[in-house]
Image 1 (spheres, rainbow, N blue to C red):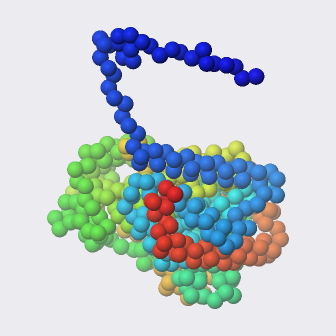
Image 2 (image 1 turned 90 degrees about the vertical axis):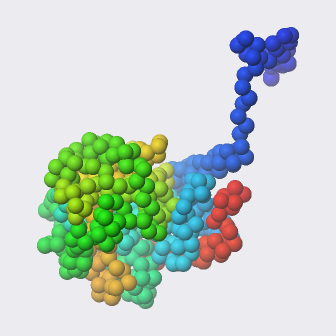
Image 3 (image 1 turned 30 degrees about the vertical axis):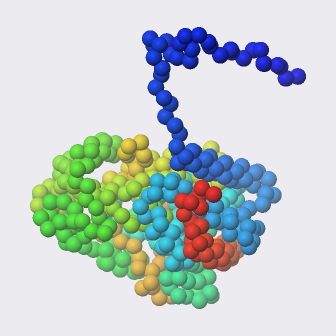
Amino acid sequence: MAQDTTNARAKKPSGKGAGRKGNGGKKSGPRKAESASDRQQVHTKRRGEKRAQAYRRLAQRYAEEAAVTLPTVLTGQARREHVRATILEDHAERLEAHAQGTDLKFKELAKDLYKYFRGTALVFYRDIAGTDAALPKVLLLGDVHPGNFGVMPNRDNVPIFSVNDFDEVTYGPFTWDLKRGATGFVLGAKCEGGLKKKKRRKVAACFLQGYIRGLRHFAEHETETHEVIRMDNAPPIIARLFEEAASSRDAWLREKHHDEQRKGFRASDEIEPVSSRRDEFQQHVERLAETNAICKGGRCGDLKVKDVAVRHGAGTASLGLARFYVMLEGPNGDGCDDIIVEFKRARSSALDGIVPTGDLDPGKLADRIAKGQRVHLPNGDAFYGAIEIEGKSFLTRERAPYREDMDLDDLDYDAWREYADACGFSLALAHARSDDAGAIDHDVEPAILKAMEPHDLFVDDVVCFAEEAARRIKKDWKAYKRDWKLGGLSRKALEL
């Protein structure tokens, strides 16, 4: 029975000084009123957390029971509202902060189906929440598609070809990368390549077959700890990408970054110099150098910050997130060999809480991303790391003259197949390192090869998944475009 607490309540003080602090009779200062904006931000954050928790429970229940409805069964208006709510939740922080670039991102996604796919990973992954829990796990790249492979520098400043975007990296079933990747190749071949359905199927199949070929290679030769794809051992289509990426650092800096005196950044629509922050970023660079064991001397010179700029309009999924470019003075001192280091705001992985990871913990924010890069790339970029700026987590990496992605709209059908095969092989190399540099405690290659048997059926299953997912994504995109035109992807819509 509930206890009557009427008489137990403390009586209001009376007499002189009542309601005042024991500070000489002076009243305490007025409490700062909570603004409507503050209350709305708290409300929005709690609502987002509630939805995220619901999907964590859904993923866990599906992994354990395999009998819980996933969002893929939603149709019509219910599906439209689910997709809208998920995209708003994913961009809540950016919308609340009026982050520059958020509206631009929404506009870009409305223009192009393939960009929409790339920029809405959370919708994709919630559709498969908790699935494939019993399959072998690897360190997932998390956002596999044709645009997330390319040429980049390793720690010795030598160009290599590999997976190149680790923002979503986390542990989970190997199939999650293959399903996302196959769907990406179906949509990329459609939107960028203009290929018909039958040819799109074959392109996606080549991606999966390249993956199987890679796993067989590493299971037999066990070279994943040190093997990389360089210009001398790359397939012809990737060798051509190396040739296209070849550029002198002097010309690249002069054309894209330096001002007329080569003393700092040149202002443009994309680059906004903030030279007043040089001293601040000098400290960040010194902390990064200590953490990553980057020594002064050689190509790094004295690690002196020459200039700082805000970078606008970069990326697809990351549009609207803070991003800085930091120019380090090269050893020659004349600008010809300066180094550009990017500081990019990190966020949680779109797979967080919905991918079955078991007890494997990838870490948090930029630290998770940096660790993932070190697992996937042997002897990777020396500047790839994690730094905290004003309480926010930032990923760091070098921008290089020979950092190059494939021009997908230049590929014909045969080139699409060759490129897809090379990307599949590259992904297999990244996955194969999960038990060498990562947290997996058993040999992953034979375990995955066995789980995919019979391999022809596995390839067909994943291709069929990709085609079905692509059709669903196209319907989602059409509803998204309508929502965007009607103001459904705005800060005001977030508050409703």
